[in-house]
Image (cartoon, rainbow, N blue to C red; front, top):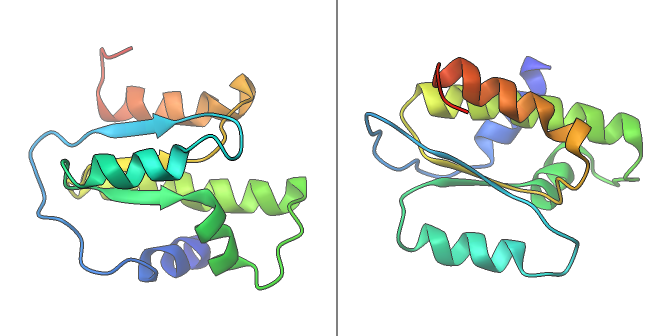
Length: 119
């Protein structure tokens, strides 16, 4: 999995300057509802790293098939990268459909581990 995290990490250019208390913003919604547009607009006002699941999937898989094994591998790498970025002091926006509650549970754990007492 660390190889997948490395591939995703290398897809970013220069990261914003680190800050003391970075944020994790999770954007959720149906496909085609403007999540990515919203994230780009937000990033104009908040220095952050956007993890756009569709774009990152294409970094890991040349010809994505969008099956459960592929999604599991993608999101495992995304979660590891989120933890690294937060620990490095970078605001992070996760841009993915995130519609199923069960699939969001790892994100809740990341937040609780990063900000004890939160949530």
